[in-house]
Amino acid sequence: MRELNYIKIFIYLSIVTVVTVGLHYATAAWLDQRYFRFLIWNLFLGWIPFIFSYVAYVFSYVKWKGATWLAIVSGLLWLLFFPNSSYIVTDLVHLTARSSRYYGGNGLNFTYWYDLIVVLMFVWVGLLLGFLSMYQLQEVIYKRVGRMASWIFVLAGCALGSYGVLLGRVYRLNSWDALTNRSTLIALMQESVSRPSLAFCMFFGVFILTIYATLYYLINTRTTRVSS
Image (cartoon, rainbow, N blue to C red; front, top):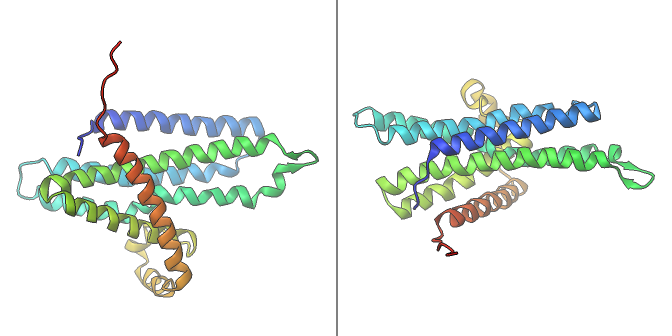
């Protein structure tokens, strides 16, 4: 498993985030609409799991007795907020909700394409944050426990992440409810046990896993230099 330079990755993700938010503001000013402002908050939530995974990654290298426990706590907090990074995918539904605004006498007008590109940029950054946060923790588990355990972690993370997206999109819960509103969370979790919910989690989990496995393969595939 290839080690990555997470300082450079942080800088890259920060630049991409600034470009994405800037694109949103430019489009909003040009089209005189502020409908997609909520994407900025959702992207902020998508950054949280990356922060927690990096904290866990750093603590895993610290030679201190309590560092392991702090890494575990950071990893659990990562799991709590991990669904936020892929939740942004479901924000594509807002394009459907606003479909009547996009059709004119000649079919789709140009505003649809601008909104689509803005939403896709937020989706892409969110998926990158989720992928790289999971990659950090898989790297820690890979070194400490082994390859098999690291991939079990990935499968479990994708499954629980998809369930978190279900709770967020369908039942309108968020990560904070696990800390501040446990009774409602438990009640809705019981309500969510159904065949449609299971199907959603399976489909979305496969989606997350496919994205992750693709990017993992691209990073870890051996390359040969092309000689001039």
